[in-house]
Length: 215
Length: 54
Image 1 (cartoon, one colour):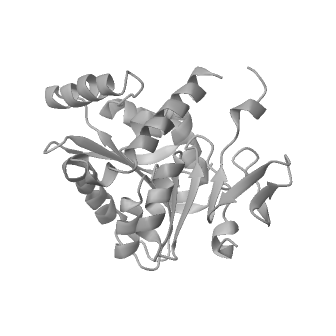
Image 2: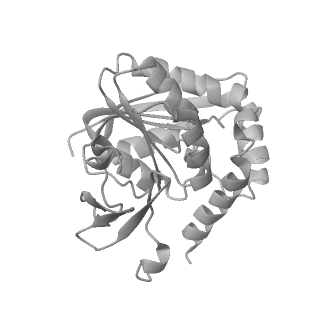
């Protein structure tokens, strides 16, 4: 098995054990809730859009998006089947949310399928980050928009949280991109109008957004 | 059965072509892979054991 498959398998096992307590984690209010709120705001008037949430975990963001955008359809994927099972409990009454178990680097969708793509606080787990962003570009319609939030590690506070504490806890198998590296992987994948918002408190995170160009 | 609106957007994670539902599986006519649908959830992973060695 390649190193990359081993990494994905390990992260899967970790989330498997985490899926039961995940929603009660302190990270929910420190980091996940603020980044989910920001993404929902950014979507503006999503209308009947098709939205894909990559690394949807227990479905909190998917649920928040469908609550604010009743005519949209939200598709949630996660590599960890236990997370998807937890998500099923949250979204059981939402016929416009569709869940599947899938890998962010091998998205199970045709080209140019989605109007919006969101990815909140899971990107640091992906072993091939540039390849994942290229795959995201592929499934977005031209003009479709990508929103990724992840820990901001470019100041001392963020560095200590993400590059020291989180990376140590995760046994070195996560990688938080710098804001500049985020802009670079977006541009390299073909995204235009790339811009960022940095939130510094309580937990620092960066939102990077871009618009998919014609392939 | 999966929601037809959902099924029509799903594709093989390898070949990126549409899938056909057969019982509790989704079939890719391009590569012949079958993906399970467990409790209403499609599991669309490529098994690394099926991949050629680099």
